Image (cartoon, rainbow over all chains, first blue to last red; front, side, top):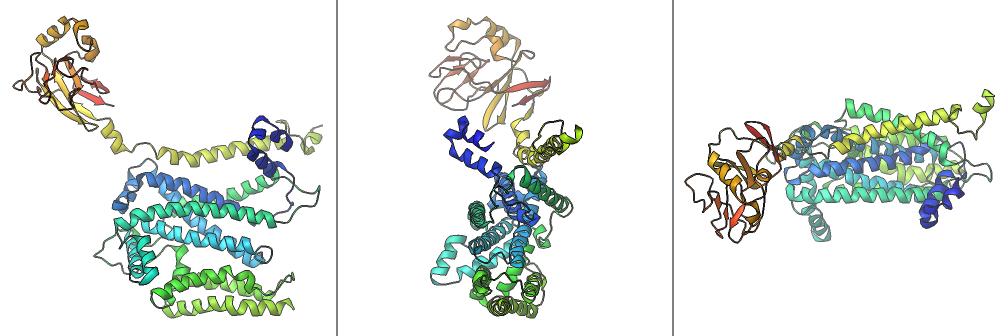
Length: 367
Length: 185
C-alpha cells in the first residue's frame, strides 16, 4: 500500500503524503508496545481538542467584561456550556496526562540516555502548559482568578531592573481588562507553541524508540491504531464522566463569583494542576523566593537524567523505585497541604530527593 | 471454508469477521467524532440575542395612512409608509420608462400588502436621512420624501424623481408575517 500511494498522482507531487503513508503503513514498529505508550498521542489529541474549543470560546470572550462574557457563553451561546466544559475538563485531562506521562518516565527510568532529550522536552511541555493553564485560569475573571493575577502582577511590577521591565511588558500594568486583553493573546500563542513542543517531542521519541528486527515489525495501521482507539475509548469515558458530572473539578469555589477589587476572598486558591508548584513557590519567602521556587522545581526535574548516576547499567533499584513513589506522594502533599510548615518540609524533601537522594541512591544501586 | 476466511489475516473483505469489525469500529468512531465536534460548530451560530436583532419584528398596524414610521435595523433607518388610495393610483399611472431609475409599482411594494412601502430612508446621492414621514413634513413635488442636504426628491414608492440622486431608495430584506407585523432579515 505504501508504494502504491507514494507513486500516486498526489504522492509524486506532494512528498509529505508519501512520508505519511510510510508512517502509517510501513511495518517498522516493534510489536508489543504498552498501553501507556499512547499517553503522548493522547496528549497531542487533547491539546488539539483544547485548541479547537479555545478558538470557539475566543469568538465570544471579552477581556474587558471577562466574567460577564463567560456567563454569556454559558447561558446564551448555542451549546456554549458544553464548549466551556470541554475546555475546562480538557485542561484537567491534559494535566492529568502530562503528570502521568512524566511520572511513568520516572518509574520506568526512561529518561536515561538516549532518552534525555525526550525527557527534557516533556518537562518543557509541562512548563509551557503550566503557564498556559495559569493564564487560562486568570482569563475567567472570577474572584480567585482576579486575586491571583493581582498578586502576580503587583509582585512582578514591584521588582526593579530587567525583571520589573519584563513583568511590565508581560502584564501591561496592574490586574484588569488591560492585562487580560494581552494575556488572552499570550494564552493562545503559548498554547500553539505547546503544540509545536509536542511535535518536536514526537520526532525526538521516534529517533530513540526501539526498532523492530528486520521482517518482524508491524505497521501503525491497523495494529497500533486499534491500540490507540482502545486507549482513546477509556480516556473518552473518564473525560465524559468529568465533563458531565464534575465540570468544575479542581477549580476554586471563589471563581463562581465575579472579580471584585474591593473584596478579598477568604483564601486565594488555584486550580488543582497549579497547586504543587504554587506550594513550592509559596514555601520560599518573597517574590524572588517564588520565582526561584518555580524555576528551581522545574530545573531539577529537567536535570534528572544527569542526576541519575546509575550509568548505562540496566539495574532497577528497589530503594530508588520506592523513593520515586514517595516523591509522587510528596508532590500530592504539596498540592493538598494547608499548613505552611508542612509545605516547607515537603518542598525541602522535593529538592532533597533530586539533589541528594537521586545521585547517591542511584550510584549506590548501580554497583 | 468459513474458518479459512476468518483466520486469513490478509482478508479485508466485508464477509470476514475482521472486515465487519473494521467497518463497525470505523462507523462508531465517525459517530463519536461527529458528536464531539457538533457542539463546537453549533456554538459558532449566532446566539439568540443577535439572531433576534438580525431578524427584528416591527408592528405596522399603528401606522396611519399617509404617514411613515422609522424602524432602526442593522444601524439603518428603515421607513415604513402606509399609502393612501390616491397615492397608489398616482404611482400606478406614472410612465415607468420616463423615470431616472425605472421600477414598476409591483417591484416597489409587497405583493400581498400593496399599500405599504418599506425603504431604507437614506438619500442615494449624499447619504442623508430623508424628510417626509409625517404629513406636515416637507415632501417635495411628488408627495414622497425630500432630502434636506442635496434636494433630491422621491415619490411615495421611494423612486427617485429629481435631484442629484440617480437611484431609487433601497428596499431591505423583509416579509409580512401577518397583516400587522413585518419581519426583517
